[in-house]
Image 1 (cartoon, rainbow, N blue to C red):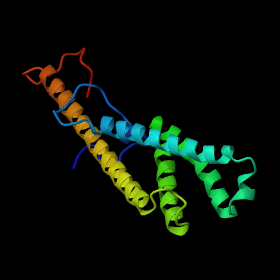
Image 2: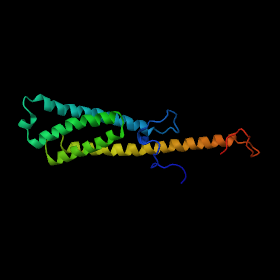
Image 3: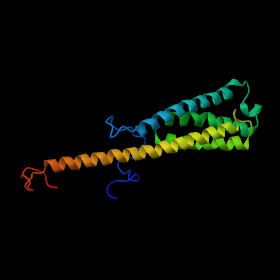
Image 4: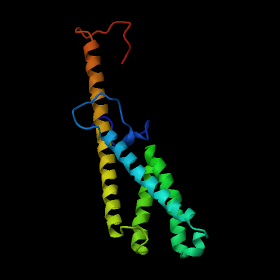
Length: 179
């Protein structure tokens, strides 16, 4: 197999989340655009979750460490801070935002299993987080494949242009660049 693979990302480490140019190779959906939209929708939900955790922290007259069990108070502070940071990272479509979101979603699953009743929804939250994680991985995979198809198309177009520019007698003019 000649050319680049999905594992070659030397010049662009953010390739799976790049939107690309608006010219479409085919009529297939642009997976990078779908990934970006998905990340922004999830980002809105995570910012709302973070703000709801901050509401719990700020609404009490006393410290939450005096009112709640210590592990629950630490979990609220943990999610209050990191939900907002993950939401911003997802909104900006940065790689660290996706990684942080995956860690926070996994932590929510762990906390839901270890502290029953901590999150509203309980086991439904586990299913929703698992579903969102699967969608994220599928969109990231397809966005990488879409980018590879675009590069292959550009390479073929460039090769075709080079072949058309070459004279029929096989000799190149002296002013043409060497290959």
